[in-house]
Length: 306
Image 1: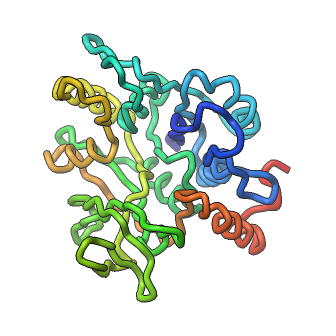
Image 2: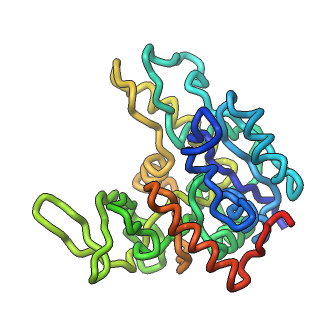
């Protein structure tokens, strides 16, 4: 069977470990953080290796606090996302402090990830099923017909991704009758309602189907995708307006460009799992309770590393 890698985008972790860094908030009964469950579920599904995208200044602490326990279970590698890591001919604009985005983050994996890979956010809990489905897709044979990239993504039910504590932004999927993605509608301020969900706007509440599939930035990609991403980053930088210090090179935007140009086919893998994330500080209690319920019914043990 093909080797597969889980890529965890963790460069957004704060510059100081400790209270207030949401990726490191314990949510499990054994002190586990969300990343522990993500890696556990991916390995169980058949992934062979984990690559963490972090900042260089966090390497020592990350290895000590997180990496060591992961290394007990699988092969682990680290790559580094830095503001000045740019293609030849480009330099970091004076005053730029904002990261370049998830597209550049994945580019950091060039030369390290040489097999089909899944991409996730460090601070999102996705459940077990999506890892199984992504692994099945990534280990199957896909014909890159005419250079068209075979891509997959986990499609979550909107109702399983909402917060009790405020509005959220979701990429609502538009699909054909074969569950292939045709576009994503970025939709802001989606809130829970007694009837289900609605988009809160200036003119009131517009209902939205809670069974709509949404993207939670969980992708399945081929190693050749990184080369395309590299060329796209050069084009992105070349088109940037002078003085623009905030524009980001985003993975979903680049994938959508490939899709609209006929250079990718994106299969949406339906999942009924509930997504958990700490969007608001108040969300932590709900995530802790959700993990507790999963432990109580035997999905996880009391301590993942016991």
